[in-house]
Image 1 (cartoon, rainbow, N blue to C red):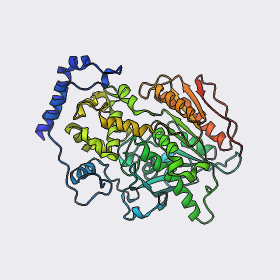
Image 2 (cartoon, helix red, strand yellow):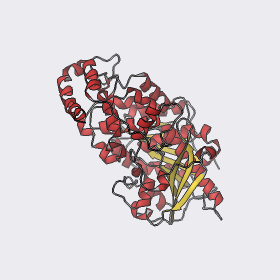
Image 3 (cartoon, helix red, strand yellow):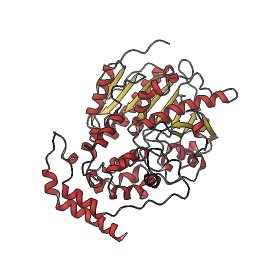
Image 4 (cartoon, helix red, strand yellow):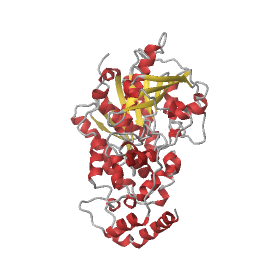
Length: 479
């Protein structure tokens, strides 16, 4: 390990000594300098100075790491990158019969009414957690969890009480960082605060909506993976409906209209859900009235230029680790430093601790075996798969973004809206004079009011906040 420590100490020196050549490295296209390949000398130094990691051999196979497409060494390495158990079997135990269960099949149910209100700082009539079967990005069996919250306020709109599928910005690697774990454990010190700011759950409960909160990063905590996120979201809805059908008298959701919302990391899962809805869960399509997405990273190829080697570096690196968990082939370009970091306590971090990596401003080129992580064939394949270009949303959309976004550039949201309009999707686009966090607060009241109106609530009237309005909205169909 001393050799590894010396390697870490040498990183800073390498960055200082090579800064002029780094800055002078030309790019083949007009793109930010922080996306350019590392100079060969830096690449070779990083590949040489840090010793290879030794992944512990598994005493018993970790089903989360198993895959028929990877060898035993990669399986052991993948297991070492996955989050530590929470200590709660509801979230930790991998059912042995998963391969026999259809997606959305309920595995386990429990009430968390005693703990959820204290975490949310809001009353709930009932809080139920569901564990259910789902599939990963390659179609292999997996499981998901979600929390179903019932309001103390009566729905005053038309028709059945709607269900809001609220995909929160989990943005973390640790298994204790999910809203489900938090609502079952009354503010365990290691958890994220589940969506108190902005208060989308509380806003919705106040209006009498039932709220379904999926732990959309899945059993591997695959942050930023839209295929997994979308499938967990859709299977959480299936599980909710299956549980309702299995409960004497039902729980009030069998005929409920469905609406969906997600911001930032939650928008990644929401994006995955609306684009997989028609093919993965077509029976749910008629139930969904609309979807709101805010701060959406629709095009991952834009993010290195806005997030690499600056204060957002920590978030970008954590997202890369989340993607590697689900797609171990990405380990092919990860150097020893990257793997050591992925095996470190970072693997159990929540949003705030992960963000503390940002002040180091370490570029991701330092963690790439090729020195060029953003132009490799693996990167290009990842950009293509995660963007899901050419697929239209199966629901009408309300998209909101910040004009002054420096992390998730607005050009990506505008391109997403333009494409969805070309594909015939009804899109309301609202661009606020704010950055990422400001747009979350400015946009969520209008987004949720729009959703409520689609589900039988009052007519949507935008707030007086100045914004750019665009898209291709069409009036909702009469029901």
